[in-house]
Image (cartoon, rainbow, N blue to C red; front, side, top):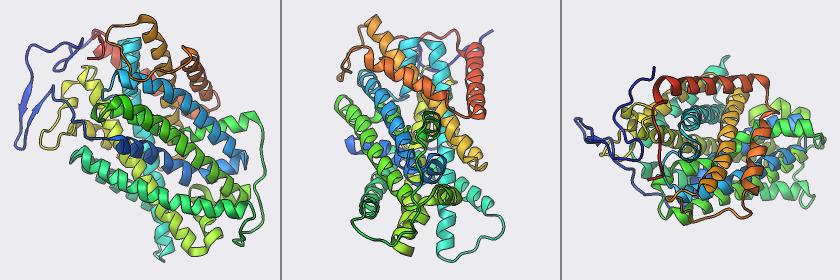
Length: 474
């Protein structure tokens, strides 16, 4: 028998009374709305900042070790799938500029069961992704310590976990103090990071094309042009493309969402995909597959050293730290908004969507985001964290495309998007097939963990949320 949900707006109708909770610091109301403080630059910073971390700094060694230069094709496949999903997401987001992103769209298009599963799975998927970014931050911090001559002893893994956990706590606290504060940090990090990367990759491309001689060792990685391996690597690195959808999770805080949401989502996918492909080309032109495999998560540091010596290694370490910081910061922000959106619909208890009016942030949701992230970050399981995050997001992406088709078919009165995907149902249908199809190339353990998460969220629906019906996009 289902428990009786309490406290928040369901059916798109106002409750009989507005629950109010008095605290020492501020008054919190259940129906308070988030403030619109993010512009186009903030949306691009969230999208680019989230995607650029893992793709540029953590995956070249792992992907290049698997398929060599063909890893560029793997990133290209990921970018195409992301673009096929970003287009339908942009239409949905301009019609429903609400916090919660993919959850909100799917719940309105496909009903409460699908909405509950995706809303809670998005929460867990973003937790896995954020933990992955924090582990990457730990590895780069460890390399930074080694570069300045600081020895960490016989347990570097513990140091990586410690750094990841401390950073997770720090970013959670930062986001509690205000979205605008987190966005300002995000904008600054992304601007500096892009400047460093453009300069570094321009030099790397010049060396790879023989326009300059950086004295890099011979040993170009071989190509593995086989569909299976390329798609398997694409499934692994797809975590790199989660940022565009995270823009949709803060739609309720975007200024001029009809214009800024599509530009932020599509622009971030196109910019980052180009940078991924160039980075892989440079990495696999400098090192062999064996060298990339040996360097692992921080292979880009050794590539920087090969191209520019110690200064090159330092640039990459700083860039890696900035990139993984921006990814983690943006992901914690987006995770909390996913929780907030689900709670506002009463699919989680109402207290999860409380907003502290002193900061204007969903502080309870931020705690529910940051806590599990910190626990998973301590495990240091890079590939498992990345693939489970990819699995859960691919399920959501596929269902978002299906939701768009369903909403267009039903033509509800409230659906009036400012941006419309051309070509009728073709693009969303192809996006759905591509998203679900990529899952088949994942590691069985990652698929098993992902299915376990979905089963648990379905169980929550039948226990708590099956009597809730959602209407419209008010």
